Image 1 (cartoon, rainbow, N blue to C red):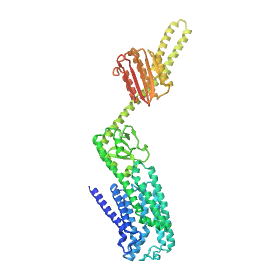
Image 2 (image 1 turned 30 degrees about the vertical axis):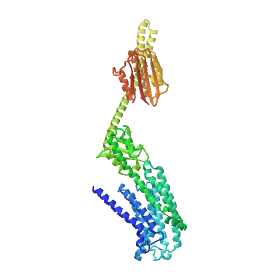
Image 3 (image 1 turned 90 degrees about the horizontal axis):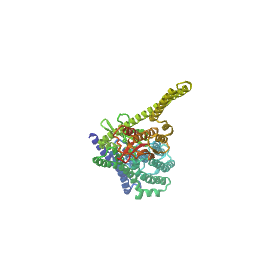
Image 4 (image 1 turned 45 degrees about the horizontal axis):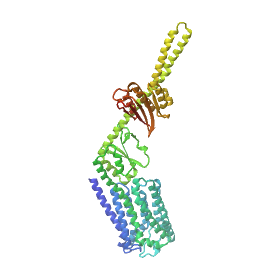
Length: 589
């Protein structure tokens, strides 16, 4: 409360100071008997006062938006420097007049440098690039340097002004050289204006949607104002006073004094209007936002289509997105910043958003976070549950992969070990039969047993993980499986390869399904169809048997469901009584 009161009083104080500066810049000359220059007329001063009051409005709005920022301080500096020229009319005391007049001559164009600073630093008050910082410093140095050089040579007593005024800084009186310096300074104005417009255009080109909302009115207003200002200075340098008089006396041209602060003020107010979207957020929160639906709502409310929400991971290590997947903010790139939304000391969410949102309204994101606190907490729980489910799925997939790897190892061991030794033993027995008398019948019996053992080992190895699946892929392995089936099986499968884990799972789905058909379906045939569409591999085993298959009975089909689900797929069974069975497994690729 005390902080709010202090800010409110400071805002009132700034308003009074700004109003006094505006009044001084507009009507200060009329206070002194030396008034006035031919351009100081009642009509012109009304236009100047209107312009100054527009700058005062910008001062108050920018201070209210960000009291700790720099923008309002720059606007205050502009108001102060704009009124410096009125010092030249003080004449109640000769000595005071000489000092005031010299100060006015030295600093009369500084407001132009402040204007460039405001344009390039808008809306935050901070210059964003090294080039801009160097350029603004150069503009200040250019203005002050030329004014100082002019003052060193300009002898005001030679002008014949009444009452006479003395330049207290003159060292080498040479009014011709002073005039050349002043004209050179005027010629430089359009060059500096062109660079300023170029830098503003560059900012517009790379600006995000949030940045363009603020820059839009300025991009329109600044070229108009700087063009008129440059025309005035060039006309002065070329001694084309009719152009200067037209700018000073035609109301339509004097509008440029209102256009520029009006552009800055409109740009600032457009960002302030974003606060109204908080009311829309309140309505949506009251109606209820489903878990998983907060991110699009915040994108719409903050008008940032690139906004991303992330939440602390369930294990506290890193972040997860709204889909539960690991989230790395640094990988997003671009003009993105992160804001941590908290409830007390607890981190509710991480908001990754357009950097210009902070420039538009530093309090807007925190206000949205406070209002959506409960929804963020629910969203965080939902994301963490999804992350845990994803980890369970990944764990199941790793278990299946490990099991498949172990099956392949056992198959290799059987093929390279036991099977080879049995075959070698059979060869030796045949050799013994040829050389040993009376052992033929015994050897024949042993050979028959060995061949049966070799066949069983081969079948066991093939059941663990068929070598043809590894070598030639799913289509060839299914053809080999069909050849050994107890019923006629037609295979419709492309010859292309798929990830090893997918091929293995699909193979065993077909193998188990065909085994069930042979044992329970009383079918006369089956068709196996493999298709690849929309990033999914689908395997269908259809038979013309008795139907009535139930995944809840027995462990075979239940095991297939688990195996397919571990890879993120799904398995469905359509088995009406008496109308055959269709087993479909779909795997994401």
